[in-house]
Image (tube, rainbow, N blue to C red; front, side, top):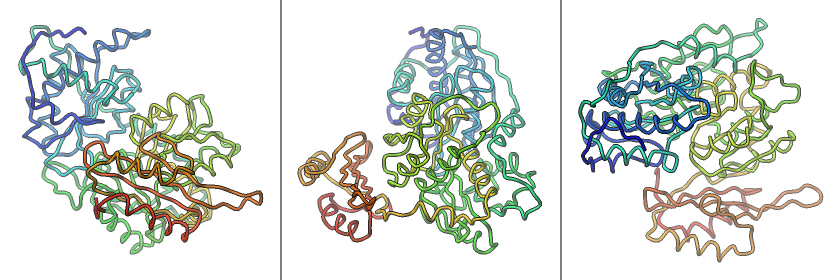
Length: 494
């Protein structure tokens, strides 16, 4: 690999901040401006090598942005200096949601992009999400290890070569137009859709007003829209934790809203509630979005990309997701957990939609990338095209009782998985991600019965993660009684 500019040394601290899908750590120790420069330079060198092998050469240009964290300005500045030292030109987008970086890479045709963010982590954390050409994710196994290895050979400082050009660019107008391609509820004089939106003091506080504020079809009730270096989080910016959804639920009920939405810190994912304040599971939302995107006669958005009718879904999802997709004559494709795997599967199949229980939703017409903004635009369109309430739309998709994800602390994860294989040797077993035991069945009359469950080992902790679903509550209760004692010590609220 070409490693100009030539700088040498070792940075062992980098070993602690490179994760499976991104780079993340507490500021300023272990993640400081020094590490940021090294990461920027290493990323630039890696992307230079990647684009050199492209059939259609890409410019030596990277887009960079950041979220609202106090350390964001200085870390992003150091990152940019490192990229420029690697002779990469840099376009600085400033403050924006992570989904904008995916749009910018494709809209501007750059070699990649880097968002400075720690997503839902506390304010003293920060990090980097790195994308390559076409906003393909760079994670473990797709280039992040190589970037780490290069960074460890570098010493912070100026290069021996001419630095790349750095410029600032505002692309909010183009981004807004892109998002609103997915927003098309009929505006026929009816009362606007009232939605309570919790920005979690994150980048949704900038994105929502910029993209949706002037849409007459909706009335926004803003919660925690303040953001910036001096603003503390009203709550952890992680909508997967039920306690963080309470402000949204309360606002929906207090203001008689039609639905609610809560975003994470970098606004690339959101959770939705119905008009009663009930949180909608992301698997059920995947099924609802599938009905929307696969609807017969749907013309889709302008300039839609060609592809298949495949819908990629998180293997932990309700069986209703698979049944809904098949009912619509489309192809369901189970996928292992993680945005790197979801994006790769959706791109390979050229599927129309992907959904993950984490709240990430992926769209073919968004460059196979995830977008909290497009998820919201699509849900608002669905609700605006019907006289039904949100709870009525979701109810038919909530047919089967579920356990929810439960976590267990174990000393020997593999031994537990082997016990489960032995105990359920008569069932269908697959190991796409962890182990999935499936005893679901239906008779000639279409009556269903049985259960399925999945157990996955955490990559970073001595934990097993358990999800189950059954055709009825009695079957689910019996399953839990038989399986949970095998799994180890339950960890509440993890």
